[in-house]
Image (cartoon, rainbow over all chains, first blue to last red; front, side, top):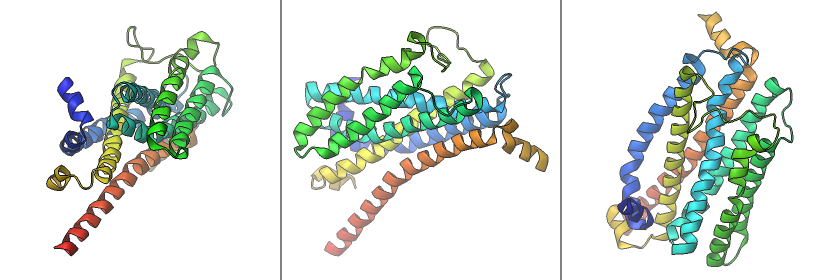
Length: 242
Length: 55
């Protein structure tokens, strides 16, 4: 475990590791995404109540999950950036924020497209929807904050603190459907209890969530690899690797 | 064949919502992957050109 962390925090080792991992991650992504999308659109039967409209869950739930997961990764990176002052941790925050903002926007958009035929409205100031919208504003705030500050080191440290403060929204989003009376349904997948979805429908959903997590890894690696080559352009190890 | 394809696209009356969701997600996934990939390819081509010019 410590060896893996060491590989991820050293720019040189990270560069070699991503070059090795990217083709494998791409293959895994294509496989899990293909099964998830074919399962969600074709193999899985229509829901008894929502008909074919329920198929939106196969893109909506993974987007919503990724919006929280990416923020959790950013919070972990922010913690390590503050405690151990790692250069890689700041880069992870900077390059995760736009991806996280994209997934949060998509979770709201696909939720809206699902809500209109099922609830009869595109939007409602429901606790889950509102807290997810706040998360989108958090992501946008972090992106803007990074580009607005002139002093790089101070900006990175302040951004890490902002990310940690904003982490309070993550449990609020998760538990909003239990703490308040909301129009949004409760959790479909549960870790320590039986899932509220039939087995025939759950596997493509898990496959899509896995595919989206791998996708985040691929895009993050691509962005970080470029950033590292720009930062470490004159280093001997990079000239040797390429 | 045509009927089953039309039925599939119709999605029991939810076609606009289902395809709108899948389409927007696929467009985002493609763009997020393509932009850094293209930037990387461009950077590598620039490096090759510089290397060739120097040698």
